[in-house]
Each structure stands twice: as C-alpha cells, then as structure tokens.
Image (cartoon, rainbow, N blue to C red):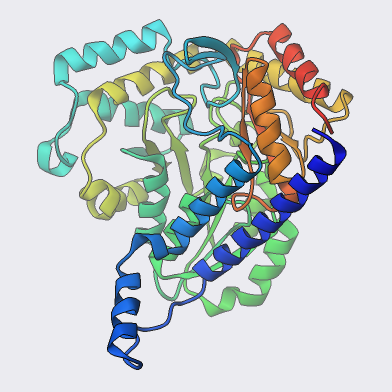
Length: 445
C-alpha cells in the first residue's frame, strides 16, 4: 500500500468513526412521539419506520461497522469458529493458533478431571435442571458448589445464577431502588451499569480507580439518599489494573454504604492462593458486603454467584428475579465448577504459573516499546493501538501469523484507547509469549 492509499484509508476511517459517534449519540437521545400531523402518506411512512428494525440506531451502528470493514478492506476478526478446546492454543478452520482470546486462566476448562466430573453429573442428573430451583427442587451438586464458594470467601452463604451478566443485573436491580444511590467505577462492566439502570436508583460514576474522587463525591451527595452501593471490580478486564481495595473499604465505612466487588477476572488470578483481590490486598472478607464472581473463567463452567451474609443470600434466593424465575444452574456445569474450584485450592502452583506468564508478557511488551496502558500484568494485558483501524489491522495481521487475539474499539472504548486485548493463561509457554511479542514488534506502527 502506497503512502497516498494509506492516507486515504485513514481519512475514510475517521469519517466513518465520526458517523458512528453521531449514531451512538442519537441512540441515547429520547425519540419523538408518534407523529399525527402531515399527510396520510407521511404518517404511514413514519409508522412504518417505527416498526422497522432497520431504522433502529443499533442496526445503523452495525451497518457502519460493516461498511468500515468493506471500504477499508479489513476482514472482521469476530465470531471465529473454534473447533475444539480453547486454551493457550486453539483450532480455527483446521489450523492451530496461539490463543489470547479466552478466559481459561488456569487451564481448567477442558481439564480431564473437570470434564469427567461434568460427565458424571450428566449421567446422574441429566443435562438440565428444567426449571427454577424453587419449582424443580435442588440438586446436591448445586448446594455443594455454593457451600464451597462460601467457604472460600469465608462468608455465611452463597447463591449461584445461570449467567454472570444476569447476576449483576438482577442482584443490583432487585436490592436497590428509588431513593437509593449506586456509584460505580467509570470502567465498570456493562452488567453493573444495566443493573443500576434497572433498579431505578440514582446512578453516578467516578473516575476509574480514583477512590479520592469517590470519597469527594459521596461527601457531597451521600446525605440525599437512603442506601448507597459502591460497585467496583477486582481486576478490570479492559485495562488489567487493580483497585486499592482497602481505600474503598474505608470509604464505604465512613459514608455508610454497601461495597460490591465483581471478581469475574480476579478469582483464581490474584493472591498467592488465587483467592482474589482480598488476598492480593490483604483485606478481610467481611469488609466487603457483596462478593460477585463468575463460573465461566477460572471455574471452567458457566454462570455467576454472590457470596456474603446470610441475610443477603436469603433475600436473593427468595426475591431476586434472575434466580426465582430463571432455570437453576445445570448440574453438569455446577459439577465442573466445583471440580475446578477444588483444583484451584489443591494446586496453587497454577496461580503462580499464571502470575509468571503474565509478568513475562508485560515485561517483554514494555521492553519492545508497546503501550500496555495501566496493566499490572495479571492475566490481562492490553496493547494500545490508538485507532480502530489499526486495532483491526493488527488483529488480522496477528491472525495471519498464527496468533488469535481480539481488537477492542469504539464504542467499547474511546477511539484513542482502541487496542488489542491479550488474556494470558497459565498454560501459555514462555516461548509462545516471546513469539507473540516478536510478532507485535514486526507490525507497522
């Protein structure tokens, strides 16, 4: 590609990004009511548009992204079909790739022992719980998993849900309501934001990981609300950085608030024994009111959980819509996650290995002059590209080198923060990481 072609490509990308930003802004603007004036033909056309998915802002955003790929000749790196167990390596289209696009942090998804326990549960209980646990009853393996998680977190009890995303939505949405305040990190997961919106409580955000800004915010507004929830994450999946948990505990005490920590990416990753951000930061379990986590990453299953006081779990078991009205966790998934949890406890060497691999990736990437943002090097390392076009081009170039990694760009992050996002597993070999950094160094800057 010549210099002129490159410049034209950059200009086209910027024009499409401006168009995407305008559509995204329009999606947040309240729509006009059904028109009643004008000619009958105009009214019919307006009514038809309101009944068409093609006129929705979401579809327009998807179309712009598709056009971007076509005009810039960048093949979509999404929805690739993996043909076997995806871990440090994976098979796509019959070829083997190094894989950095999954959360199998400790290599337990596909572990023979974990798979065997899931198969045993299928033979004993079948493939589905068929209905909610209140209606269809419980299975011992569901309760065993909850008891094991409660013991790990050193709390009274635990309840598991069929979806990690739905866990945050239904728990936040049902525990808090009008007259309450939910304050979350500006980079909090979509599920936290959706739960806050569902609740009807006032929602505010504070700058990422800035506990001082949170403190100042609550000093200004705490007196206006009944109950307050502070929601943060243990390890942020976009940037790979960690909160100063002790500071957030102090703030929640001084401002009489609840503290919720989403450990989707920190359980099994942080702490000498993989017990998460509390072990990493030296904070007692009881200092956090709501521990949330997922079963799909370190724990090799699918679903989410909440661990905490007996009163909290009693409320959720009987009243949280995402538990009460949703099917119970499939016994095979519960068995898989319980087996993975037992392996995590029995084999802390997996956690140490993951820590070493993450540090190697971060150190070598920085030595190569790559922008790793705020990453602490624990399983999640972004490589900032600074533009959507470059992120997509780099992802495809890496794929051509036999390395599968996903780009992240607007609207998931700001355009200037577009990136490749690498998830490191304990099963990645040192030479695989070095090969990956070497491939990144060869990419055009």
